[in-house]
Image 1 (tube, rainbow, N blue to C red):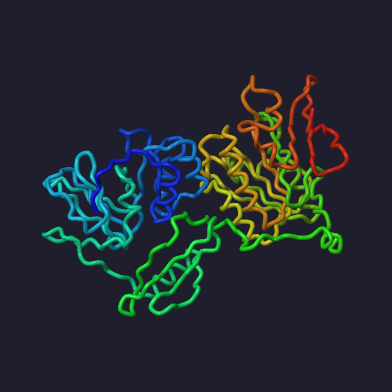
Image 2 (cartoon, one colour):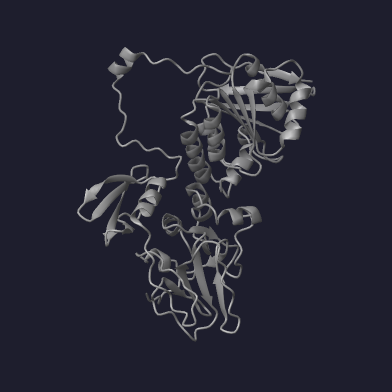
Length: 448
C-alpha cells in the first residue's frame, strides 16, 4: 500500500469509520502534541480507550463541530512499528503510512507482549494503551484484510497471516451484535440490525477451518444501547380508541413515568436535599428510587440522607457512585440490575454529559443529540427521571437561567422545567413549568 497523500485532520465520518474497524479514534491538543485534548480526555479516560471504543456521542462531541488533528489508541493485540528514519521504508505487507520522519506499520501481536525498542535502528514498538498520531487515516481505512501477525526476527519480516478458527470468528461476530443469516456455499452471511443503516458482513471459509471477514457497508456500527425497529410501528387512531391506552402514572406532582424533569438552582440552593427528600418520601410509599451521584460520593450522600430525618424505607433507596464511570450506559446497567426503578435522580447534568464526551455544554446541536441518546437509553425503564442542573454564572440571560446553564435546547426536550430560587425575603421556593399536567403547578416553599 502506498501513501502519497498526507492528511493532518480527522473529520467525524473518518473517526466513525476508524471506530467501526476497531480503533479508538481520539483528537489531540494540537499538531505538535501527541497527547489527547485535556478538556475531555484525562489520564484515566486515556487509559480507558485502550479497553473500549469511543461512543458515538464522544465522537460527535470531539469531531462533530469541526475536523481535528488526531490518531488512534492501540488495543490489546495491536502493534505499531514506529520507524523514525526513512532509510528502510515498508514493503507493503501491512497497512502503513508515511510520516514526517519515517513510517508507521500496523500489525497484530500476542496480547501482553511488549517488544523492546531498537534504539540503534530508531524503531519504537508501540503496543496496547499507546497513542499513535495518524498522518494518513486511509492507511487503516483502506486496508481490507486482517492485520498480519508480527514476529520478531532478525530479518524483521512479518510472519504470515495467522487466521483464527471459524468458531472464534463466529463467536466474536455474535458477541459484537452480528446476527447469522445463513450459509451460502463456502460463505456465511451476518447482519447487524441495530445499526443506523442495516449492515451486512460476509464470512468466507479458508480451507474449511477459518474465516476472512469484511464489511460490505461503510457505515459505523450503532452503539449497543441503540435499538432501531426493523419496521415503523404505526397505529391507527381507531386502534387507539379500541385500546384506550392509559396515561402514564404521575409518580411525582411534577413528573410522570417515562418523563424528564430538569431541576436547576444555584450552588447551596438545596437541589440535592430536595432530591433526597423526594427519594425518602417515595421510598416510604413503596416506590423504588435510584440516586445516580456524579459529584458527592457515598459518605456525603449518607450524611445528607440521615439529616433529612423521618423513617424512610432505606431498602427502596439505591445509591450509584458514578464519579468513576460517568456515563448514561452505566446508569442503565444499574437499573437493569435493580430490576424496577420508579424514580431516577441524576446529580448532575453537567458531569453526565462531560463524562459521555460532549465537549461543549453550550452547543445546541451536541446537547440535543446527546439528550436523544439519553431518552433512548432510559426508555425501556419507564421511570420518572429528575435531572439536577446548575444555573449559569451571574449575568446570564434570565430566560435561559430558568432552564439551567448551557444549551437552551435542553428545555425543549424535558417535560418539566423547574427551578429552586431564593426570594428577597430569603426563602427558597420550588417552582415548575409542567407540560404534561392540566393544573398549573403552585410554587412550594422549601425553607426560609
